Image (cartoon, rainbow, N blue to C red; front, side, top):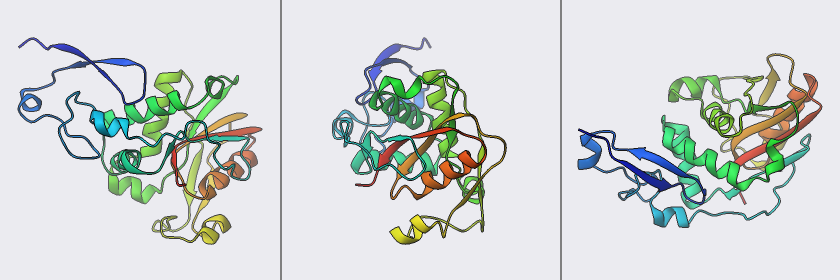
Length: 230
């Protein structure tokens, strides 16, 4: 059987990517859209209708959490963008990571990726949840950005505290007070860091990460986040 070559476009990303017919199963049961669960003709994570419905923020500035020199979030945490984040968190989904990486690169100004010595630093997930899910979603996203930008990834942060501690369900005051999150640097931090995370709610996680990086020697800390809660 000769694999056929076709092209698809990733949501709002301008790049066309080659796609090969991987198996007879996919020909019989086509891939489903991660948002509406209908067949996705291009075999991508989103069908054309859901890709067109992505809630782009179109340059609206994100709130700057304490300790950050800048923060970019191209999408609102709504609709198809929220569904992609959930898909990346809960199961290994390489196509989802590729699409989210394309959206981040497309949605951030070119100068975001240009500072000399810049290192991508994934926001640390709970080790307990990473083990339970079988995936470290922020590291997966950071590696996809590294593949697209050529920047290195440095896993310099880790979570501390009880394995069941979590930000979800906490009030804004509790999040900002850091009662559910403690982050530390596992090694000296690069001088110029770009934090990578999937969602920003209050910015408490990013602020804790920035403080840990600066205490470990970082001089400049910025962040890119796939989506933020409006």
